[in-house]
Image (cartoon, rainbow, N blue to C red):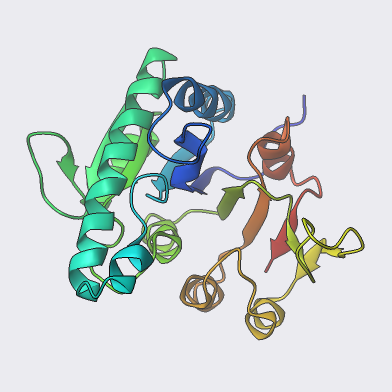
Length: 237
């Protein structure tokens, strides 16, 4: 089997990856499936950090539509990401993968506070690190948190693992003729205003020369192919 060309990666996973059939809550079976996929990557001696969203538990826009303060809505979302991080960490541990959860908002009874050097040490020891609570600041998405953590820990690659197999010029669900891009520059992605990744995250990747791959988490071997350098999804670099 071809060896991975990347030593350290950060994988951004949406909260919906853990959701029940209706897109809400946490489904232990789905968490197990995600953990199994991650364990296959970790078993190939790739150092793995994970940033997880909270779309299955809380969507800030719903609060904003009801007049909620933006900062408070974002803080609720950060706390929801910690719930997902703990669920995924438990699933990974049951797969035999040593895992640590670190949070940008301190809650020492349930997780470590995020400390960059401690995170890198965990990675060097073969542990998966799940980063919760986003950046710890309102007005920033978990996409941006993933780009920030990847830059901070010196990751070689950021992977946006979602339910679509790349970036398209139109919605492939409604337009069967939508074109998928195999490769884009950062500026092309920004000018296209791609919906799969927010502009702040892409800009952070561009400023730090961090390649980004958008791929389908549920497509068999897609993560392994990406780590081997095989063309999969859309590469933004």
